[in-house]
Amino acid sequence: MRSDQLPPAVSPAASPSPKAAPWRRPRALAALIAVLLAVIGGGAWAYVTLTEPCPGPPLPVTVAAQPEIAPALRDIADRFGTQHHRVADRCVEVQIVAEGSAKVAADLAAGRASADGWVPESAIWFTVARRAGAAESLLPQVPTALAGSPVVLATTRPAGRELQAAGVRPSWRLLRSPLAGGMTLARRMLDPSANTSGTFAMIALEQVAGARGEFLDELKRTAPKDMEAMLEELTSLERFDRPLVVTTEQAVVAYNETHRPNPAVVLTPREGTLMVDYPMAVIAQEPQRREAVEAFASALRSRATRDTLQRYGFRAPDGTINGGYARRHGLDPDPPRPLRLPTQRQIDRALRSWK
Image: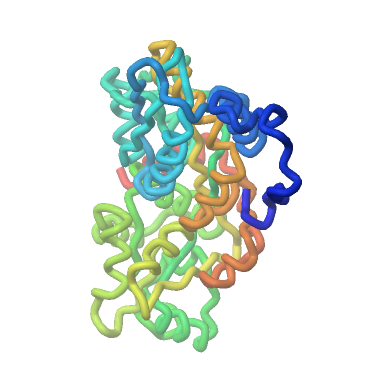
């Protein structure tokens, strides 16, 4: 709740007598806070949130999260911990561990996953884990997205201006050729079998430009090891190579926070795009740990969580974003034009495209 939304304070002159002021009593105050938190948080789990210490030892649980969303989830988990959410009279403590989606999917399939909850890049990874042998009961059939970030192209601000001056429009077709508007492009993307941005780029290429050709060999040969390494190439290429990388809108926002005054710019392909959506799964098998992660999952549906995720550059799952925030970061405040939803066969081809 923002400060401008708080109820008016009661002046001392208007205060009731101590006998009529139950909020002065510690236990009543704790209960009142619990009710307020329930209203603010929007979930039933907030009703067991108290300011008093929990009588039992803490109940620690771990959530494995895709690295780019992990910092935002840590902030949310810290706030969750201060609210003393209880399961069987034990305060829930949530630890967020940054883990790539491909690794967690493989660990689940092999029966060696140590986390109690999982937030991958996309629900695609639930299917990948199931097909590799993960228990059906651990993964949701209809996942709920926490946030959204469109897969986009990006370049440096000077290169973006050059491309615009040459009449080059952002398009997935730019990945097929090293030349655009008479300029050399240094194209980069991540392995589609391990990164959803690469998977969705291959699906987009298939839908609008054909995902076959010698250009795939170059993309594979020059692929960076991860998103951080790829974005670092924006400022480390040869002078006359204009970088063009496949990334997410949120990754560009995060990169720009630490790379001023020459930030990257988002080039949303004119044909449309797909969004990574960061769903959550409760993968613990022990009942109390499942209950604890479900409590955290309930808190992730609150307005405060949406605000935190936006501060880290994420859109809402439907693609909306605050207009003022979008303008500050050079983003389009409107949801991006969507490509056709891919079929499972298209997803499978994209995942195997570099093999």
